[in-house]
Image (tube, rainbow, N blue to C red; front, top):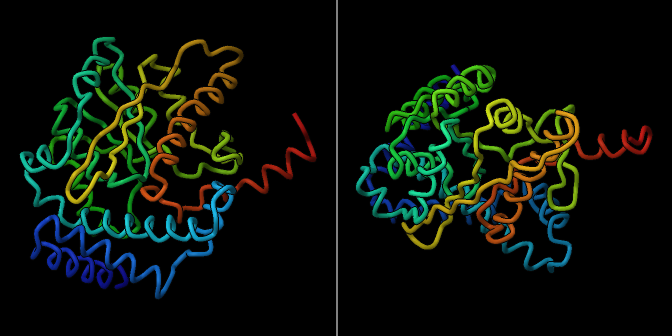
Length: 302
């Protein structure tokens, strides 16, 4: 029953936003985000704590501005998700520039496929659609299943609009390596907290558990790895930025190589977040295992 009730309100929101233009949907999302943050403030304490740790040099007023803008970005991105299946390929190309799309295509010349990483940054679902429109290749997208099965089916349908294949995280290793061996593109979001036993990378000055999937895919396949970030540049104006992750000169054991490669892609992610901190999802519990890790290191240093 709960799933049906949630999906009912989800569909109401879906039908409501489609009454507006894409630009007005963005305005609506931003305004609603500002209202929710100011009046209710869900996870406000967590957002502010994360920002204070990440930017100790900033004043409290500056922190509050970023926190509010980050929540506005989240609600805007959510409203955009409800609108995405209304956008045509032509509109996506009109709203989103991708200056280095030919460079992205060139990575496939290695014959080993391509690993694409991104984060909950800007409008990440729109990023996935836009990349498949600008660079129409075969994509395998690693996803997490939504708790509500009806919402999951809706989002899955939207994500695969332009032919992308969706793979659940628990099946990601086998299916992703197969795709890479067929010289295809494997894409995944790489900024969420990993398990307590994950690889710990330095992220904004604190060790953060990180999923090892990207490093495993690269070391087993030899595929090049890039970071793609969809940056908001104004109302209905976006730019996809590309940066290659250095996968060369990794030394030591296989575990050491995984740790180093993970740190490299986490550092690139941090660089982009520092450029536009208001566009990242600061309400995520990214450092939830940090204290446990630090206590363990203090007790049993390596």
